[in-house]
Length: 278
Image 1: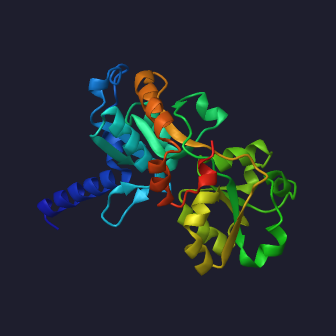
Image 2: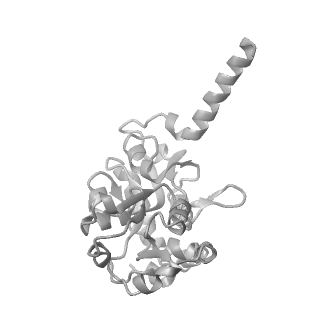
Image 3: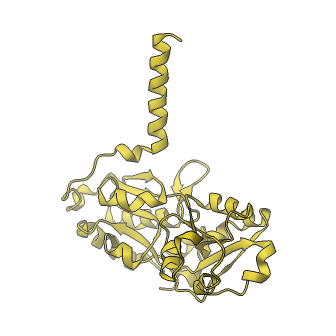
């Protein structure tokens, strides 16, 4: 191998590494007052993670889903038409928001007490109950379960959740120990782990489970919604110091949420009127 070929190999490896990490990792951070005035809101960087139907890419590669489309609608009313969508892992969303590499998170992030300590949330855009996904062969064991505490009390089994998701915090609050918790990077990995009996069940939002009904059927998995559990409330997340931006978005959300236009928009993603009841 020539010196030139070696150099080319190093360059290609570097480019591949940057791509794998995601371009968000080299985005400059915002200064403390970078979003203090409406004139600074163009070119807004909005973080999202893939979890249909909250956020995903359509066939053309366009970012879509319940959260991006609702955010686009209200941002347009505020006068924000230039949005830079930044894809990352779910667990990276809030850390990157806090250091200023993204300005907003719009991806079906649920409001929790722990998250409210570090970021500011918009008005919730829906209310969604969690669901338990399990193997068809375990139907009799789990189909009557309506509370997470019932599974925690079993003191056996391993339960999958998306890393840093709302369901992880709920299980921990019910007393589930680390030995019985398996964090997954994305939904399809969790489904595969369940199908291969690496875990006994997977906790996910009911809306996400419905979106993947065909996949679940093909993998001989089933789910039911845990209506005995508190509903989760997805919302947009902002840095606490970006007060003006959050207030402007919230004002438009107050007018938009529940409107006919809103209902028609989110119906495309399987969101029902019951889930829009605030």
